[in-house]
Length: 360
Image (cartoon, rainbow, N blue to C red; front, top):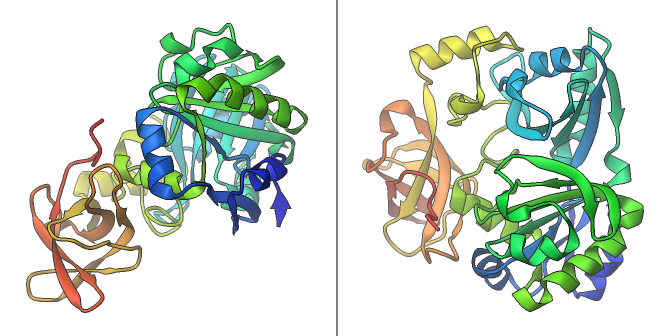
């Protein structure tokens, strides 16, 4: 297992540490529900330093990015970030990621921890234009400071106007006394906030100052378990659960990041799929009765026939009901339509809903 720079800080806070994507990571501190609600109502800080970071630079950097990614990165400007995915050649997704345009010839790609090596090899394989690539994953740490109080609490640590930063923009600036920190108005919770990228050697100083600045606003350290319940309440896809090598961005409701204004890997097939409609769709549902849907549970129709599978599910701390995502054939998909989730020996009725589950 690899160790993140702040592992000793988490141990001192009595975090429950578990192996995750090749790293020892804090999964919880006080408990999922407490941590979840703290982010929804105040703010919390997640250490997500296991994520991967690649620098792509040179005259042909954009050409490479346009080839491997489904979204249109030509729309980016300096200081703008973009959510996208990398399609494979067989209709699935290599990974989902965020692209940051530092300047016209320098981009930062942030990828999922479990896919760092796979993604690196995939991008390298398609780098026929000889863009310069550098994997800086092992040098970087990443904190996600999330929640409605995040901007107010962190303002003391930087001269960047946090309150007025637009969603999916970023600045490279001083933060917590450290120069050249990437301060990004992004996140995976739906409650606002920032993601802060910096070198491992500055991790302790930044962590201490973040906790100190956030103390009077009620900041708490938050583990990966609450990160999962927060993202699921928003209906955000998790790679390995809701999207993978066998799910297309079209059936995963990621058509909005799949732009056919350019050519990219497998774009012709995906365009055809969009025009004809996918055979199956990712749906969101709420249970009509008590129960907790879990990944891998069967989705069944009124006759008890298995029609799909739950890809993510939990008891929503905000809504206090069972919620989930799953794939069903397109003819069964539709907001308001009824399905059943097989929970142990019981078929629990559920209703398909429009995302997000949590409206804020």
